[in-house]
Length: 354
Image (cartoon, rainbow, N blue to C red; front, side, top):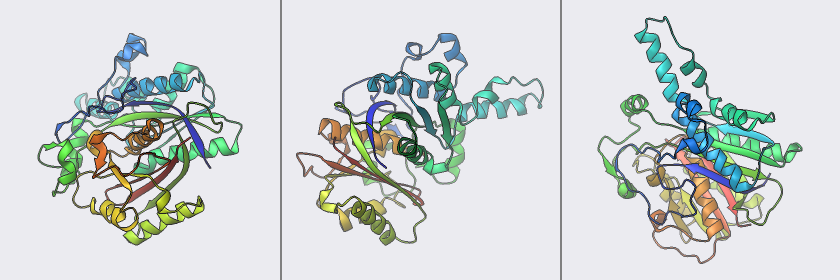
């Protein structure tokens, strides 16, 4: 199953929204949580509607609107999203209202907006799109599951243009709870220095990104998504390496055919060594990049990596802020993404130049 990426829209902690600039000046933070640089939502939404919507919903609508315009598609044949936490801010509002009001006189708005499929349904309502609409809530495989469904929809149905997105937000309450579990760094950290970190925990992040997938090649496609693999809790790093080699073999490729690898290095000393071990074992001479110092760690951060890889193939450039070591290539034909979350959820993407 393969697909062409025809359009992209992304809201992130970087200057990525409605711009052709490709991280010429990366935004650096000195904190342990990154928040999105949000657009002016009245460009996409009625102000009255926008006031009632949660932050994640507005980010999703803005990102999807830009993606649709970028691809030149008015109504997609399907809308598929992936999210681990859904509209977490609205969920918290409703739960706090239950406590504060002693379970009485509750307004339904926050509850209605708190469901995980709110973003995909609101996009459909804005577009008046009655086609296939689905949201995956598979923890750290949520975006990858949505992407896989998008590929299957293109391969097995009459659909030609499928809108696929991933979104998650970070709230103060959720940050404090997950910090107790050791997910985040205790100290404030300069994001450009996390690659050198020797402490546990990463920097939390958030974002929303949408991609228009098509089974028809166009003149202005960003990249071709050729393969996607997910595997949970592998017994050893050797198993991870073998699965990547198997994926490449299926596409009649070897490690020498990969021009760039995008690693999910997060600054967490407990898990980052897996990336370096893969690099040393299979891709020691391949141009290496990383991305979580730009968007932070979150459960659907794979969507940011997919944006970064697509832009590398489209522009044939690599931002200096993402490089690990030196760039060994002048032309990029194949890019591999390897990401894992807390050492358990592993995902691999293979993209090629159109």
